Amino acid sequence: MIEAVCVLGAAFMLDLLLGDPRYPLHPVRLMGHGISFGERVLRRAGLDGRFGGIILVLAMETVSVAIYLLLDFLVASIFSLAALFLALILCYSCLALRDLVYHVNRVITALQNDDLAGAREAVGTVVGRDVQYLDKPGVCRAAIETLAENFVDGFFSPVFWYAAGAAMGLFISVSPTKSGICCMIGFKVASTLDSMAGYKTPEFLEFGWAGAKLDDLLNFVPARLSGPILAVGALITGLHPLEGLMTFRRDRLKHDSPNAAHAESFVAGALGIRLGGPTIYADGLKQKPWLAKGKDDPGPSDIQKTVHLIKWSAFITMIIIIPLSLNLR
Image 1 (cartoon, rainbow, N blue to C red):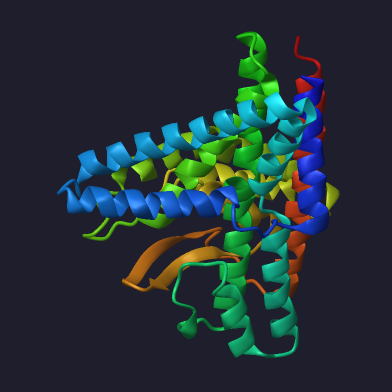
Image 2: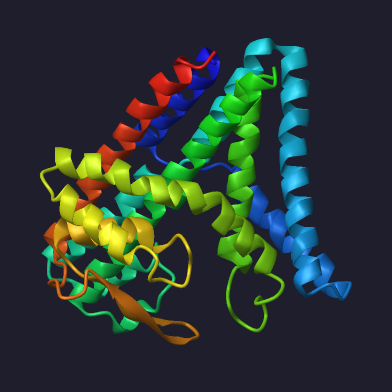
């Protein structure tokens, strides 16, 4: 288990220091290519409904994990430490905290310079909504919401599933590092499928159903654990953890997605701001409910507070998971 913990800790530090690595064989990029290829093949075969989407999910999960295990076997047969390096690179590539903070910091800089057009452009790189209509509070809401939601999707959930997989490997007498990486890859496949095909449009409503449901399932526990983790981060950063938890309890199920509003509702309460509300996407206006309704609109300083909250909450996550993992026998 010590090896698995060291891989996770080193991956976290690499992401914190260097950000998401950019190389042609990045696993998430390869997953995206595989999903696009699989979609084309299935649609040409007439399997463009729910059944075709299920086939795509099963194929992507199986192939992605199988490729990792094959590579692990090949590199381990050449040099045993190479398998550990492969696990580290994959774990590091599945975390995406620093890059998120980098893009959001660009939004803060633009707003501080009264450059609304630049702020819209910057926030447009990390959100799916139509940014051309956003006013200053709208840009701030978009930045804060993506920080909160991606704390779960881009950091907490992959770490959770790596730790869960490592623990499972320990109990079934297989390498905790390998089983942790397999579970992390499984989560990233589901997340990538949801981001590429999980839309409620005529084209993807049925075909993307399986990927969206799997993503909901794998984020279900991490989203609910995010509240207590963020509460510790809020306590450290001088925010309002009790108000955050109260809003979390009241508003976390207000969005259509079973998981999306959990971290967002906590952040809204902890900062004393309102999030959500009517949002324009490429396919039209979506009437999202308000989180922390009645509070003030956010400003640039609230984005900065959320950045600090997310960073500290990431550290808290590691401080909790690493000792727990080391105590497993």
